[in-house]
Image (tube, rainbow, N blue to C red):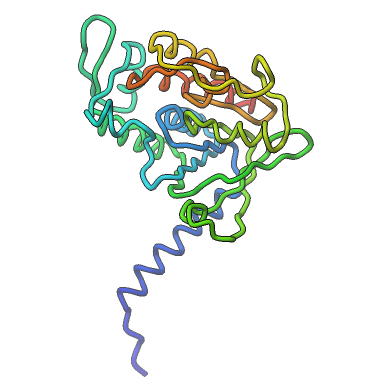
Length: 263
């Protein structure tokens, strides 16, 4: 009897399906879930994975990187302060000094370099995946409820699946989507002046850069916020196309989570 001929189409499709489901199954119970793969989340993912924690990121868009790609008004160049440039250099991202206090960075190199660095450190990134809810166990945020973003956009009635986690970081930027779910759906009081979300103020770059880092913290058992999500929660000012505060916020939240998880 002749041996069955290997069909390339079957092999390729099988490889994609089997490897993806191995990846998904191995990330159903994790140490840290990060929602939003922007600059603060990617730095946090890199640092946490490098510390040996199991980290998964969920990005609703097809391309991770957050608002980095477009630079300022589609001029694909951004700025960072000197100390934040040092973080980029750890990822192998080149910067060019600009005056005494700042560096400029090619925004495409920055976005792709942060993504690559997070992956090589061991973090897993699920793109086109939306976190539509959180999991609460005995007063602790304990997981994320995920679905495909196209399913959500098309308003299809498709049930999600659940990933359990020991720590959940909101890196969704200006909307603070995950903290919103905790406050408005779960009814929890978070660590903010009002116990709720104050909302972002207009632009003031210098103050916004400072408060982005200051406002990075644990908000509730199991729940954290970084970057613009943290600033929106605490009522900080918007900062625009300067990214030092975002990078330093990601590093700070990683240190807080590592301490809380004993890593």
